[in-house]
Length: 322
Image (cartoon, rainbow, N blue to C red; front, side):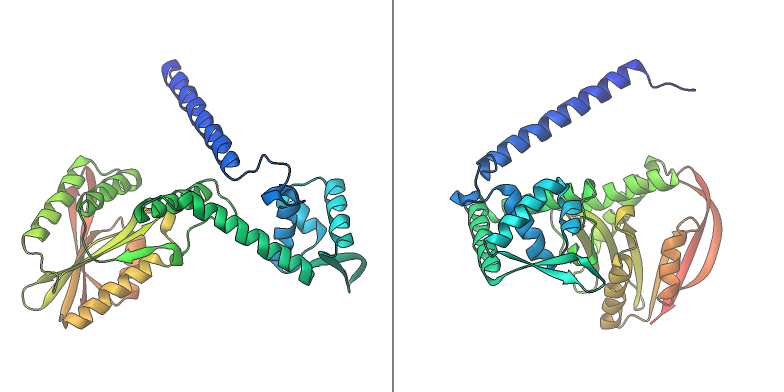
């Protein structure tokens, strides 16, 4: 069995320790900022746990004690005491379940809803004050970073959805470099392509920029959590033809409909430009992308064996009549 070098193990432990220390430092800062160390929230009679229980009932419309306990990982006895207090205060009401008279679901009363509305407004104002001195782009970065943390830690509801992705087509400084970087990273990891492939992508972009005409050419860039996650381009060619290039998605953003959304934007642009034909060059290794091409009317017209980027493969051409 091959063991990891001692130096690498020590480096990994050091990195983990630094990461853990950084997370704990952030937690200490944020809990102080939100006043979570106070016995009561917003100078009310309610603790943080009280408000979280109310929020679970409010958010779900109706829920059970079991649902709250599983969501908050709270002690059953402690939760029972909180719910009894809320019932006495007229904040929560129990509704027996028809199929099991011993169980009940919980809803907020009008008084409970009013309290929850007040708490939400106070919480929103508190965070608004934290953000008020930040520039708009800094606010966007904070929002992206928090969504990214939830995604990486696999929090419920943290997985990316198509509606979370922003697709734009105006080119900005840094975009071309990110296109090259993403191609280099993904193709090396998935197919073992060497550094020559990254050079090839740089050359295609250099050639593209020499004749770039925003009225005839378009590059769509998809971003989420503040990072580029996908792209596609249509480049005009002579005789009213066009070439589709740089169609790529980050692996963790496949399967949410992003590839289809990008392809549809590209094909609609081709129709608007009244191109007679669209073609693309790919390899036999990109099977998933090829399935998207064929679903959108592309037909494979050539397959030639090549040795490229450290790989023995078939370079393939697909065409679609518009």
